[in-house]
Length: 213
Image (cartoon, rainbow, N blue to C red; front, top):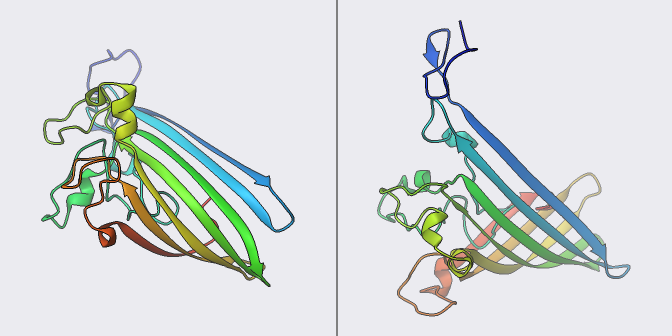
């Protein structure tokens, strides 16, 4: 096995098998501000990038980023949006496979307040998306380059809001959230920033353990 001395573009192997080469970095920031004895404002920001090189033209699927779900943008299910402004075919049962990216931006704000006893309520806003670093002809609109400008990038960010209940059992927290979509990153039949065609099309229901962040 020889790895050293190989050129940048030369295929590198381990035990005769080519392996993926990539660099990945991620940042996850969380901050909570206590408003009063019974209420807290919790914030979360996450970003990351993965860059394939050498042997790889794309990053390994399991290493790529995605958004949606109980701990992300709660109005949308896991891998139901992105990358960028790309809209996957809804007819395919495997469309979620295409909804990953090499760059991620996500922000969440949640107001938490005690209702009674061990029961707490929450109001939240989630926003974010993933993008490809390079254009992909099979996924038009998916890359950062195709966003074109800061305005184009912001328009490609999915936004949702919602409310939830939490019950603190002291050793764990049981959480139920209902997310409501406000903005989809791709064009729909509805014009304007609020572009959800039907209200029921962008509802997310999540039963989970622990806080989302």
